[in-house]
Image 1: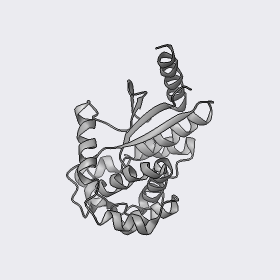
Image 2: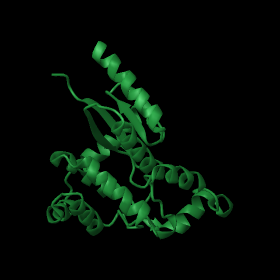
Image 3: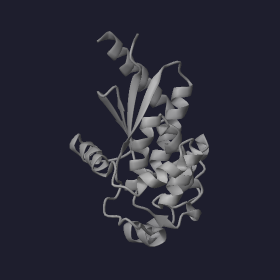
Length: 214
Protein backbone atom coordinates (compact mmCIF):
# COMPACT_ATOMS: atom_id res chain seq x y z
CA UNK A 1 0.00 0.00 0.00
CA UNK A 2 1.38 3.37 -1.01
CA UNK A 3 2.15 5.89 1.70
CA UNK A 4 -0.05 8.93 2.01
CA UNK A 5 1.22 12.03 0.26
CA UNK A 6 2.52 14.41 2.93
CA UNK A 7 2.32 18.19 2.90
CA UNK A 8 4.15 20.11 5.61
CA UNK A 9 2.64 23.58 5.98
CA UNK A 10 4.88 26.07 7.73
CA UNK A 11 2.77 28.96 8.97
CA UNK A 12 1.92 31.34 11.79
CA UNK A 13 -1.55 31.94 13.24
CA UNK A 14 -1.05 35.72 13.00
CA UNK A 15 -0.12 35.56 9.32
CA UNK A 16 -3.21 36.59 7.32
CA UNK A 17 -1.78 35.13 4.12
CA UNK A 18 -1.41 31.80 5.94
CA UNK A 19 -5.16 31.76 6.59
CA UNK A 20 -5.78 32.43 2.91
CA UNK A 21 -3.23 29.76 1.97
CA UNK A 22 -4.93 27.22 4.23
CA UNK A 23 -8.32 27.84 2.66
CA UNK A 24 -6.84 27.66 -0.84
CA UNK A 25 -5.22 24.35 0.02
CA UNK A 26 -8.62 23.12 1.22
CA UNK A 27 -10.09 23.96 -2.18
CA UNK A 28 -7.22 22.29 -4.04
CA UNK A 29 -7.53 19.08 -2.03
CA UNK A 30 -11.33 18.98 -2.32
CA UNK A 31 -11.01 18.94 -6.10
CA UNK A 32 -8.79 15.87 -6.24
CA UNK A 33 -9.15 12.24 -5.23
CA UNK A 34 -5.97 11.90 -3.26
CA UNK A 35 -5.04 10.67 0.22
CA UNK A 36 -3.09 13.58 1.68
CA UNK A 37 -1.62 13.93 5.16
CA UNK A 38 -1.08 17.52 6.33
CA UNK A 39 1.38 18.41 9.06
CA UNK A 40 1.34 21.94 10.44
CA UNK A 41 4.74 23.34 11.32
CA UNK A 42 5.49 26.44 13.42
CA UNK A 43 6.95 29.76 12.38
CA UNK A 44 7.15 33.05 14.26
CA UNK A 45 6.32 35.90 11.93
CA UNK A 46 7.79 38.31 14.49
CA UNK A 47 9.92 36.68 17.23
CA UNK A 48 10.26 40.03 19.02
CA UNK A 49 6.62 40.12 20.18
CA UNK A 50 6.64 39.76 23.99
CA UNK A 51 4.73 36.95 25.73
CA UNK A 52 1.87 39.29 26.65
CA UNK A 53 1.50 40.51 23.06
CA UNK A 54 1.18 44.09 21.83
CA UNK A 55 -1.53 46.61 21.06
CA UNK A 56 -2.51 45.83 17.48
CA UNK A 57 -3.04 49.38 16.23
CA UNK A 58 0.24 50.65 17.62
CA UNK A 59 2.10 47.60 16.38
CA UNK A 60 0.80 48.07 12.84
CA UNK A 61 1.50 51.81 12.90
CA UNK A 62 5.07 51.23 14.05
CA UNK A 63 5.61 48.55 11.41
CA UNK A 64 3.95 50.07 8.35
CA UNK A 65 3.21 53.74 9.04
CA UNK A 66 -0.15 55.51 8.94
CA UNK A 67 -0.28 56.06 5.18
CA UNK A 68 0.45 52.49 4.14
CA UNK A 69 -1.79 51.15 6.87
CA UNK A 70 -4.84 52.70 5.21
CA UNK A 71 -4.71 50.27 2.28
CA UNK A 72 -2.47 47.43 3.46
CA UNK A 73 -5.32 44.99 3.97
CA UNK A 74 -7.06 45.66 0.65
CA UNK A 75 -5.38 42.81 -1.30
CA UNK A 76 -6.20 40.36 1.49
CA UNK A 77 -9.82 41.44 1.69
CA UNK A 78 -10.20 41.09 -2.08
CA UNK A 79 -8.52 37.69 -2.18
CA UNK A 80 -10.46 36.54 0.86
CA UNK A 81 -13.79 37.45 -0.70
CA UNK A 82 -13.01 35.26 -3.70
CA UNK A 83 -12.68 32.16 -1.55
CA UNK A 84 -14.80 32.95 1.51
CA UNK A 85 -12.14 33.95 4.04
CA UNK A 86 -14.01 36.18 6.52
CA UNK A 87 -11.37 38.69 7.60
CA UNK A 88 -12.56 41.19 10.22
CA UNK A 89 -9.48 43.33 10.76
CA UNK A 90 -11.37 45.95 12.75
CA UNK A 91 -12.12 43.43 15.51
CA UNK A 92 -8.46 42.66 16.22
CA UNK A 93 -7.06 44.59 19.19
CA UNK A 94 -3.95 42.54 20.05
CA UNK A 95 -0.99 41.19 18.13
CA UNK A 96 -0.15 38.11 20.21
CA UNK A 97 2.94 36.06 20.73
CA UNK A 98 2.01 32.73 19.15
CA UNK A 99 4.43 30.33 20.86
CA UNK A 100 1.65 28.79 22.97
CA UNK A 101 -0.58 28.50 19.90
CA UNK A 102 2.20 26.61 18.12
CA UNK A 103 2.71 24.36 21.16
CA UNK A 104 -0.99 23.58 21.06
CA UNK A 105 -0.94 22.86 17.32
CA UNK A 106 2.05 20.59 17.84
CA UNK A 107 0.25 18.73 20.61
CA UNK A 108 -2.89 18.37 18.48
CA UNK A 109 -0.90 16.13 16.13
CA UNK A 110 -1.05 13.42 18.82
CA UNK A 111 -4.84 13.30 18.58
CA UNK A 112 -4.98 13.92 14.82
CA UNK A 113 -6.80 17.24 15.17
CA UNK A 114 -4.15 19.61 13.82
CA UNK A 115 -6.02 20.88 10.77
CA UNK A 116 -9.27 21.35 12.67
CA UNK A 117 -7.42 23.30 15.36
CA UNK A 118 -5.50 25.45 12.87
CA UNK A 119 -8.75 26.39 11.15
CA UNK A 120 -10.34 27.25 14.49
CA UNK A 121 -7.38 29.43 15.53
CA UNK A 122 -7.36 31.28 12.22
CA UNK A 123 -11.08 31.96 12.54
CA UNK A 124 -10.77 32.99 16.17
CA UNK A 125 -8.10 35.57 15.40
CA UNK A 126 -8.84 36.84 11.91
CA UNK A 127 -12.63 36.71 11.96
CA UNK A 128 -13.57 37.02 15.64
CA UNK A 129 -10.72 39.20 16.91
CA UNK A 130 -9.86 36.85 19.79
CA UNK A 131 -6.46 37.02 21.47
CA UNK A 132 -4.89 33.70 20.52
CA UNK A 133 -1.97 34.44 22.82
CA UNK A 134 -4.33 34.05 25.79
CA UNK A 135 -4.24 30.53 27.23
CA UNK A 136 -7.92 30.52 28.15
CA UNK A 137 -8.79 31.44 24.57
CA UNK A 138 -6.48 28.72 23.26
CA UNK A 139 -8.10 26.12 25.53
CA UNK A 140 -11.55 27.23 24.38
CA UNK A 141 -10.49 26.96 20.73
CA UNK A 142 -9.10 23.50 21.41
CA UNK A 143 -12.43 22.42 22.87
CA UNK A 144 -14.25 23.78 19.83
CA UNK A 145 -11.89 21.78 17.62
CA UNK A 146 -12.76 18.54 19.38
CA UNK A 147 -9.90 18.47 21.89
CA UNK A 148 -10.23 18.25 25.68
CA UNK A 149 -10.12 21.93 26.73
CA UNK A 150 -9.38 21.23 30.40
CA UNK A 151 -6.45 19.02 29.50
CA UNK A 152 -5.11 21.70 27.17
CA UNK A 153 -5.39 24.41 29.82
CA UNK A 154 -3.25 22.30 32.13
CA UNK A 155 -0.80 21.51 29.33
CA UNK A 156 -0.29 25.19 28.47
CA UNK A 157 0.70 25.98 32.06
CA UNK A 158 3.64 23.57 31.79
CA UNK A 159 6.86 23.87 29.79
CA UNK A 160 5.97 20.82 27.70
CA UNK A 161 6.94 21.16 24.03
CA UNK A 162 8.44 24.64 24.48
CA UNK A 163 11.96 23.52 23.53
CA UNK A 164 10.66 21.25 20.78
CA UNK A 165 8.57 24.03 19.26
CA UNK A 166 11.52 26.41 19.30
CA UNK A 167 13.62 23.70 17.63
CA UNK A 168 11.04 23.31 14.86
CA UNK A 169 10.97 27.07 14.30
CA UNK A 170 14.76 27.11 14.12
CA UNK A 171 14.69 24.20 11.67
CA UNK A 172 12.39 26.16 9.37
CA UNK A 173 14.91 28.99 9.33
CA UNK A 174 17.80 26.58 8.78
CA UNK A 175 16.18 25.08 5.67
CA UNK A 176 15.73 28.54 4.20
CA UNK A 177 12.15 29.48 5.07
CA UNK A 178 11.91 33.26 5.17
CA UNK A 179 8.22 33.73 4.47
CA UNK A 180 4.97 31.94 5.16
CA UNK A 181 2.94 30.08 4.26
CA UNK A 182 5.44 27.62 2.86
CA UNK A 183 4.09 24.32 1.56
CA UNK A 184 6.61 21.47 1.46
CA UNK A 185 5.37 18.64 -0.73
CA UNK A 186 6.60 15.12 0.00
CA UNK A 187 9.54 16.62 1.92
CA UNK A 188 11.14 17.54 -1.39
CA UNK A 189 9.46 20.48 -3.12
CA UNK A 190 8.56 23.85 -1.62
CA UNK A 191 5.91 26.34 -2.65
CA UNK A 192 6.09 29.74 -0.96
CA UNK A 193 3.13 32.05 -0.50
CA UNK A 194 -0.66 31.74 -0.58
CA UNK A 195 -0.70 30.10 -3.99
CA UNK A 196 -3.95 29.67 -5.91
CA UNK A 197 -5.82 26.37 -5.62
CA UNK A 198 -4.89 25.63 -9.23
CA UNK A 199 -1.17 26.10 -8.62
CA UNK A 200 -1.31 24.00 -5.44
CA UNK A 201 -3.26 21.21 -7.13
CA UNK A 202 -0.92 21.15 -10.12
CA UNK A 203 2.15 20.97 -7.88
CA UNK A 204 0.66 18.24 -5.69
CA UNK A 205 -0.20 16.08 -8.69
CA UNK A 206 3.15 16.68 -10.35
CA UNK A 207 5.22 15.90 -7.24
CA UNK A 208 3.10 12.87 -6.31
CA UNK A 209 3.69 11.48 -9.79
CA UNK A 210 7.43 12.01 -9.42
CA UNK A 211 7.37 10.27 -6.03
CA UNK A 212 5.39 7.34 -7.44
CA UNK A 213 7.84 6.94 -10.31
CA UNK A 214 10.75 6.99 -7.88
